[in-house]
Length: 117
Length: 110
Image (cartoon, chains in turn cyan, green):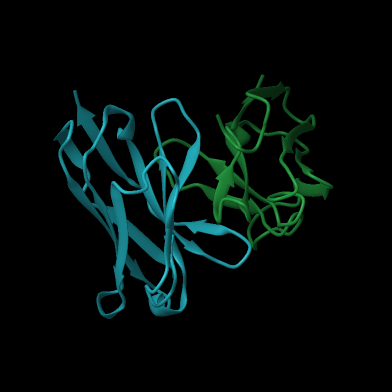
């Protein structure tokens, strides 16, 4: 059974940093591209970044480029999102998702990040 | 401002049919498969329709998807109270080299 469990969220001051983790199980993690997506309060889903299966290539949404870094450790079946210089507008529920070719496959309930101003 | 455009809300009485539209462009819907997600707060977004009109196992055939040009739609027939949720369309965007979503449509069962 495919499982993705996000963790690492919490309350952080504006300008601070946080590292999110996504623990994967139930599938061969190293075979799949992975993404981070967030949902701000009262807003829709926003894709943030993706990373290729080997970790060689990444890409980011303009809203987080140069502040967030996506990475993975295939030996640990884990995906990460390092978030720096956090802003109030980064307050959101953060989800990881597996890329299944034509779509994103969400499994976790997300981890909540609150940026205090 | 979402890249894909959806109506903010839709409502219908139990047993009726509701349709949600999703409008995009040639770099996303026009050239890539569309996915529809159902999201209930506190849970993971769930894939209802992928590859424009395919249902994952376990999704009732009351849910159907279609695509034409740069637009797509999700239809829910035989509406049930359990269908109250937010529905999002999504696709990969070749210009942005990333995934894009609609702003979400809140479905209310009257």
